[in-house]
Image (tube, rainbow, N blue to C red; front, side, top):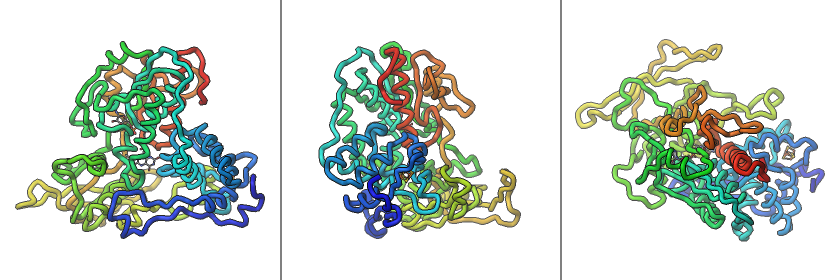
Amino acid sequence: MGKVTGFLEYERLEEGYEPVQLRLKNWNEFVVALNAEQAKQQGARCMDCGTPFCNSGCPVNNIIPDFNDLVFRGTPADWREAIDVLHQTNNFPEFTGRVCPAPCEAACTLNVNDYAVGIKSIEHAIIDRAWAEGWVKAEPAAMTTGKRVAVVGSGPAGLAAAQQLARAGHAVTVFEKNGRIGGLLRYGIPDFKMEKSHIDRRVEQMRSEGVVFRTGVLVGEMPASSKVTNDAKEIVSAEQLKAEFDAIVLTGGAEASRDLPVPGRDLDGVHFAMEFLPQQNKVVAGDKLKGQIMATGKHVIVIGGGDTGSDCVGTSNRHGAASVTQFELMPMPPEQEDKPLVWPYWPVKLRTSSSHEEGCERTFAIATKEFMAGTGKDKGRVVGLKTVQVQWVGGKMSEVAGTGKEWKADLVLLAMGFVSPVPAVLEAFGVEKDGRGNAKAHTEAAGGYKTSVDKVFAAGDMRRGQSLVVWAIREGRQAARAVDEYLMGGSALPR
Ligand SMILES: Cc1cc2nc3c(=O)[nH]c(=O)nc-3n(C[C@H](O)[C@H](O)[C@H](O)COP(=O)(O)OP(=O)(O)OC[C@H]3O[C@@H](n4cnc5c(N)ncnc54)[C@H](O)[C@@H]3O)c2cc1C
Ligand code: SF4
């Protein structure tokens, strides 16, 4: 602990945002990272707790008190060491330093009666400086094992698994059905939250470490009816992969969107969020798309109050929507959590994202009953929807009589989460599913991450269901260790 009285002297400082009017004009990141002096003060707020709850609250168990202290000390050598500490537990801090909701901060001891240490902003500052200084380098394995591993899916879980396995000396090939690497980091999360150059830089690093990337290659099957982004020009069968590789890691995500099968669902203008968002990310990347779904000049209703919905709000506002409204089925949570009751766990509370601040009306405890069709030139198109307010008693939902309402809407985006992986992908491998349709594999002890099929492992959203980038990185790392143990009879990779 560098400064004993730091938490008494300095207040928490949030990262800055560019003004709304400016950031709505482009797709760039708009968060202004802490400078070295600001990061030093924020690092000084850390109390170096004997039992650092931040460390267990973080899914990758980042060694937070150590890098906080190094940033407080502040010499170039300390910053250099800080990135080494961060990389011990997290392959991609530039991803989590930007998009992680920071469960570590909810768990921080200072959060009990003060504002948590700004751990995420310190992480962000460390990794950005490390890249700028040229401290992030390829780490090719000292020797090769002669074993071949296929990773199916290039989201954060697949990338973390691939990097760990390559560093353990295995020959790793990543198969990705889409045109670019990155999974939801690439085609779900908008550029204004995370620019894609961060992924490209890591892909180059991993290539230098020996990882082979094959994009536009679908492994197994993907029915067109799934409405999942699929740019594949080539198909490789599960049997082919099993014959060619010594182990396979399935990290295909949970891509099956939750639908809203009410009357009018098939009208033009009603889309899954994951039809809308990937198109915009492709356009930002320079692709030319025919018939892009645009929110320009439209009254947009986003159904679903989570991260995906919030990204639809930010994207619609950048398109120049006439209005953006977001519906949430659950009642509005409290603005402030009951800290003694919930700390150190993740609290349910009202979260207002930067996208909400850019312009959005939010409505809670509301259910959609019907999408309304237009007439004349709008025949076959959605022009509005009918809703009712709901109440929740004892975990059961019921409609509130007399609260029916009609809303104008030219574009409706369904952002109600994801139910499971696309079943056909798991079925192609004959992998047993759990009750929710995810790949069935436990994570503890021997045999962790192994599916019901010999030499086939699963990790990330494909195993645990819809989750977070940081959980995907954790699972990718742990699955890599499990695969290494399976192939070599032991592993020096960290768990
Ligand atoms: C819009 C949106 C915003 C989000 N925002 C955040 C956020 O701010 N913070 C956060 O922590 N989390 C966020 N999440 C969640 C987070 O992105 C995911 O939990 C995480 O990306 C899961 O990683 P993964 O590697 O398991 O799978 P994914 O990222 O889903 O990657 C799976 C990859 O596998 C590929 N694939 C699937 N099947 C095949 C096949 N058969 N053959 C070849 N390739 C295949 C897919 O094309 C995809 O590229 C968001 C999710 C969405 C949808
Ligand atoms: S819980 Fe908070 S104050 Fe304690 S070590 Fe972690 S970051 Fe520092």
